Length: 305
Image 1: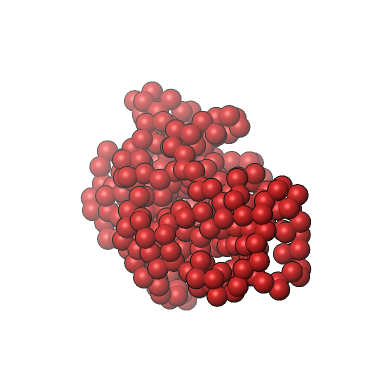
Image 2: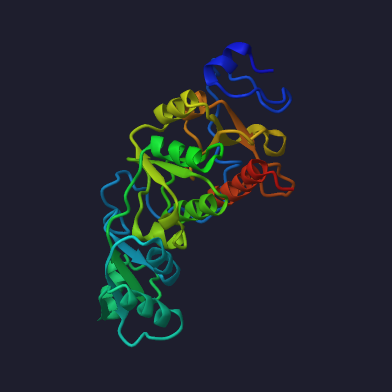
């Protein structure tokens, strides 16, 4: 059972003793694990992206939003759009709707050769449309907490500790938004940023989710703990997800594809959670693990099931 000292420090109500572990004062170093059993069979990471300034998919935060779903959500979000680039001769299907919406908002629509769109998209599939928008504005950690308070809900936050694959980060953003998370936090370095490919992989969910970029994930964990948020690392040796109380203020840390949650971040977390495994393959991809864990957290937060 949580001690009276911890209750006073956190200012949160006590939970069931069998579900809410007492916050440890320290923990020994443990072997690194990936989020909820690392997926060693997943597609290989295309290339490590060590710095948040550039990468194989183009300059980060360059304002290019690629793909039909991502552009649709951009237009819905109300974020300023400079122009819509449409592949020459590509005026069929959902592109017709996107062009009409752009013209209705007074956004210039420019027909562009496929080769130019390919280069702008970093040769990722763009489905014949790219929007040039104002850069996505990052928020602060405090803004995420205020957003939750404004909704009258306990915070549900996702921290990404070194995810380097843009497809994975985009999928995690989509999972977080769909599950009602109040925000997502990424590090400034040694991880992928909000590239156009991340935006496309999120199917436009990035337009509806508060995202903060911080210098130090471990320090941010400590900041969240002081604000009354319980922080759990998604790791293979953690407690059973379905026996863990995630109904109050909580944050889930998802580690990198290769090494999982780093030792220094794992050490400052309140605990770890894992997804029970029943098959022969012993791991989930990080975005799949995010979907399972966040869906359970959302169920507990909203009292469903």
